[in-house]
Length: 230
Image (cartoon, rainbow, N blue to C red; front, side, top):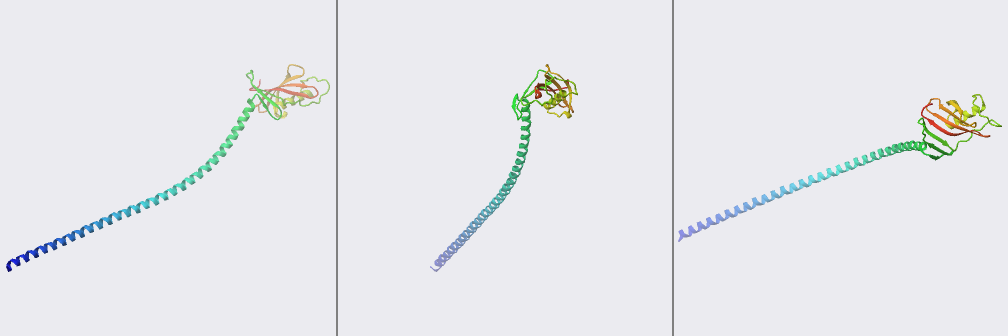
């Protein structure tokens, strides 16, 4: 009996010892698994914090870039507005000059226009040497020093000749001292004359018809702007 009890006790001890080892091993395995979980959680948490920090840095950089971009855009807008302002002033000035030129051209081409002196009529001509025919209802007789019955004179030293020249200058819008009288003769009747004058630089050439008004002097009735001196 004692030998059987001893063997039984030995086996029991071995089983207990083995069970203890298993428990210790299980505990160690549990500790290892726990450590692995803790390390994994730390790694994941650390990565999340890094990603969050990186995202925060990226967001900050983007915000700074946006601020800089907005600042640059504002400066560019200001510069653009200044350029547009200058361009607008330049365009307005150019437009004003263009309008002035257009008005001048329209004044020359319009058949009948009103001005302070009267109605100016500009017409084309069948004469190839005539650029345009101009009639101004505002033309007035230039006055006269002559009295009695009028006799037209083509003597360059006579008063009548001198008054004809003044009437030509008046219609040509030239001063008598700044023009040349190239021709002055009968205009188809005793009380009508026609003359051709040029500016001294030759840039303006006119053939002007005159009519005598009793007691008032010679009055321009038609002005033809010539291309060349005949």
